[in-house]
Image 1: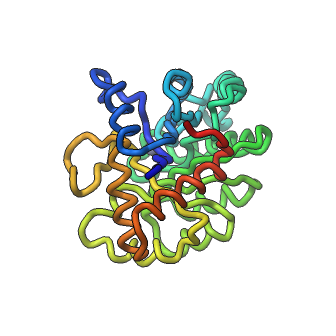
Image 2 (image 1 turned 120 degrees about the vertical axis):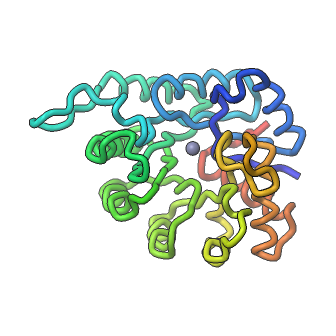
Length: 267
Ligand SMILES: [Zn+2]
C-alpha cells in the first residue's frame, strides 16, 4: 500500500530528537510521498533542506496567516507594505525541483496572531506569486471563509484547501474552483457526521489525505504528537465513509497528490 501525507510540518522542534525515525516510520507504513509545509521564510528553508535530505519528501514554501507579520516592512496609517525581500527569497526557493507548491498560506481569524489586514496583504502577494511561478497553493482557512473565497477568486490559482473542516458552501466553492480537498485527522473524531456527509460529495479525483503533523493527531492516538505514519488512520476512516478499501483510497489519494503537485517520481 502506498500513501501520501499531503500536509505536514517536518521541521517542527517536536521532532528534534527523532526526526529521522519519524520519517522512517512513515516510509515503513507505506507513506511514499510527504509534503512538508513552511509557515514563514525560515521554516520554508528548513522544508527545502529536509526535502533534499530524504527521498519522497517534497517541500512547500510560504507564509502562513499566523506569520504574516514576518513578511511586511511597514504597517501604518498609509497602509501595509510587503517586505519584498521575503517574497523574492520565497521565489528563489521555488527554483529547487523538490519545491512543489506555495504554502501553507491563507487566513486564520480564530487566533489572529497577525492582524486580519496584514494576513490579507500577505495572502494576496502570494496568490500573485503563485500565478507568476505557476505553482499550486496550499490554502489554510479558519473562520475566514468569505474573505478567503473572495480573495482567492481574484486570482487564477489552483491547489488544495487543506484540513477541510468547513461547511457545504465552502466545499462547493472549492470544488467549483477545481481545488483538491485535504482531509485530516479530525475526520476520525466522534460526532463528525456532517463532515462525513461532505466527504462523500468530494469527487474521487479531488480527494487528498494528510496529517498536519505534529498537530491534529487522529482519534486512535489523540493527545499525542502526530506524525505522518498516522495518515493511514485518516485514509482508513475515509475508506469506511466511502465504502471502499483502504488500499483504493491510498492509491487514489497518492495519484491525486502526484497530479496536484506535479510529482512524477515519488520514491
Ligand atoms: Zn499546516
